[in-house]
Image (cartoon, rainbow, N blue to C red):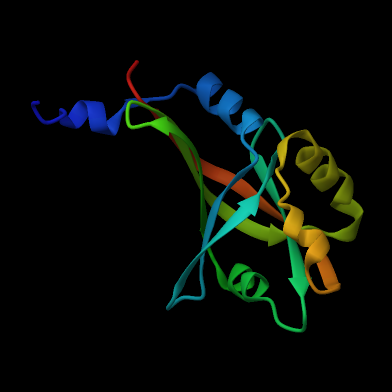
Length: 150
């Protein structure tokens, strides 16, 4: 069997509507942060406001939160969400932008976006008691999406 072409492996670029639809239908991905020296990628649930913002909820268990520490130091974050059915059927979107903690009076935006499409693992209810719940917003500055040719 001949090797797959580079074009087949890279996929094709998604248009704005395809990216928007994909973000509305996904509920999890990987948020990549840095403290300036070390990279930290963390799986997270997310909400999408349908325009230019992604929202995340950080649940702090115990006194220290590595996510919070890295998020506060990250100047530009990257978020990747994807769906892989097979090597010939996949989609991915990568968004980059500034990350900021959401103020208490902005929680309605977080709750609305998270409620629309975030995915929550069941382990939250089994974890140690939560010390804090924080909302974070990624203001999308750049976004791109790829999908397999079908």
